[in-house]
Image (cartoon, rainbow, N blue to C red; front, side, top):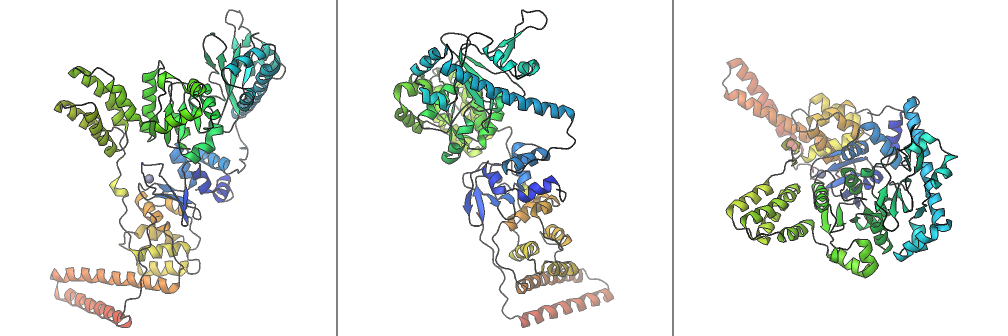
Length: 602
Ligand SMILES: [Zn+2]
């Protein structure tokens, strides 16, 4: 729990949960709440709610819920300090420099800052070389031929690394230490030299593509060879500021379009991403390699869960591609595949056929498994062995599907598309459809029992009714009216803090998951104005319930034929309670209106 006056407390007070969660989930206003598709379980209709006033989220489907920190921790799989930092950053709350940061950390931070600065300088240098350098006009002509005019070069920050081998080194040497130059990934060391070897430019005679992180800072470069130099593409190595598996090219510019269109186009290289973006389709990102890494998928998932994969269909690593795409399925993406005719990559296709033709094919891109079935059909299936091979190719993908119904649908489709009649194969398919190793089963203990309207109402009052919260709490406590209720633990927690305004997230941390879920369920209902009159009526109902329960117990004890003294005592008590109930009914011949069940937020 956040300590008063601490940074955590400050962030908690200032953070806007709708804004933070809105970066991960598409939220729509629904009454007082915001609703969206739950990021913690798969669903087609939204049951994930965010409460802007109470600053909590709650999924009516899987029961996930908590405050903004819990959300970030669960989704990013990180610890509290990191979640705190993330939330502060997203809400523009300045993060204080930790007073006792270790010298090591301070040094690393400075190094990263200097490396970012170096990359900015290098990018400016490359741009100048392309525009004014001696070799620049050759490169510009080459790019022009590939359809990249001056406007495009400027828009994507393209540059040129000259062939001399030390042009960039000479430029940066005055400002940065040799050690830093060495770490930057912009230089290589001559291994033939003795005594460590001299540094020289890693990128020579190449068109340079700046690679930016999510916030638009240049952290690496991709260099494309002019002519037939090998390798065709050369990227920055891993450095303190660049990790290939954590970056999607063009994401910083695609963010908004990804959210708005709720789907992304995934291409292989930067030339492809640029070509697609130039065709007016901004929601495109490049993985910069055939194998998509899990951190990249997590990154993309914050913006959309629907993706059209437009990789080079003839790429050598097709199997690797298909494997990494299976990862997308596993992460519950809706995946479609755009395979351009003639084995063209997006860059080439757009260059030759134009944006309209591309858009048309994009709209028709088939779901991923349709595409895979197509691939399986191309295999030789004239023999039993061939059929088994085709099925074995498909089954891992079927098993990756998180939803059992979907898996069984696909099994049926595959059986009919591949004309699988053999019972053995059908059985194998059926098993593939049924099994999923990492299947998430709903925990039965998390399924909250339906809470009675009276209890719901009282709990809402204990949270909200500033005027009589304490009075209500002491009334419930002194008569033990909450004992034996399904909501007993929730009442206990609320009563124990009745003097103060309850914070749902703090309450939640004091409750077991089942009770926490029940509480959030209740808190997400829109509640009407509270009056003491209504509170009294709810309390009455609990009192009657208490009496009815006691009567039932008495009945049981009387049935057990106790000793005469005891029996008399029991009968007297029974009489007393019955009389009491009768009086109450006489006083209220028509039962006072009790709050009916509030409309479900679903
Ligand atoms: Zn959920």
